Image 1 (spheres, helix red, strand yellow):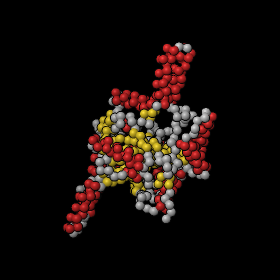
Image 2 (cartoon, rainbow, N blue to C red):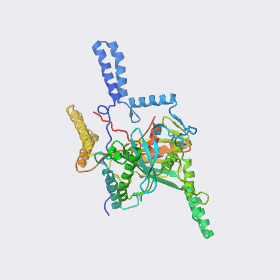
Image 3 (cartoon, rainbow, N blue to C red):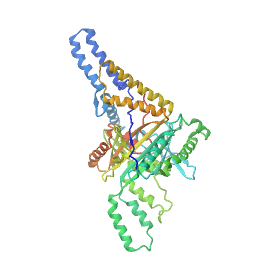
Image 4 (cartoon, one colour):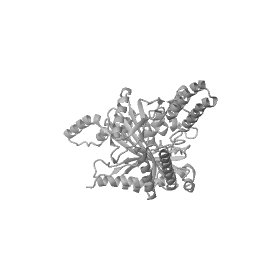
Length: 507
């Protein structure tokens, strides 16, 4: 058997205004410099006693760090959050009694915060079914969501592991082309407690009348004992199309939302072969009601079991004709409130994290498994969002990264400063990435977000501590999304392909 393959090469994205300084940070350094020069120009010791502390405070705000954020970013975040609290923008109450549309007779979708602009559209999937398309009119994107089944990596031999990872990387690389209409691919997985209600309901419907009484009793006892210890996992794939990049194709397909949906469906059909090669099975492309259900169950975990039981009973006598899922206008929470470090929604509390540092050493393909370890007191969610980059843009960005690092090393050498091993490693990594790109490999931007949700507030910090311990075991460094928990929830707990900001160029 061949040796297990290891992986590395993750590199943090630099987005400072100048070097690692943000725009406000640069302004603070400039203000500190001007303040420090005032006593010199005035030739006054009194002015020096006043200006020196002020300049020191400004420099501390520019270069100081608070829980992974620069001090100026932390203060801006705190001020923005307090303004939202004062104006009650951090709270959300659903518009259950909102007036219905005069055209459709339905209530509008009612989602909080950054999700308020989204609309769930309906489109033919090309196979006789209906596809739910999440439209963001501000970003000009259309997203389809699929439920995925996969065999996993932990219990297969090394060669199959390597082949499946290579097939997934080939899928991502196929979209690293100039002006690809697919601009984002998101993978979302949930691990949640399951009391076995749906399984018991399905079993009750499929037990025949002539089944032996002893077998039925034994099966019932097994399900009663195993049900409370059961956990279930849900895996989703979100594919996002940009209307701007696919402008001509959309125009050729009829234009507008109809044309955009047709182009998106065409891309989805073209993707099936690559997904099969990676041993990923598309169970279904979600309909509008199924998309709404994934959103609803994230906001209200208690509804998970009710909806699972109802969907499993749809074919039972007395339940025929019951449509699976949730109406899109009922997808959001009844009420939600964003705190400084937590997000309360309906009867649950969630804390969201961003992965800030990936393993610095070589890692196996299964290194993320501890993050979704089953827990009876909490449900966990993880979102991996990929943005394929075209060859021209990848060449420019990697060249810029190499130039920045070379310039920094040259300045340190001229000033007599020692070069750290971290700087040498980053420079070597930048060169190896550029060499891989020149050899035909693809370059993607990627972010990972995690969320932990509980229905008992007293268990929240314990669940957070367990998640951070499992992340440390995987070699990851997490950062709690202070002051932005509602935005973090939308990106980490929902399979809508959210969470990767636009690239900000530095100097």
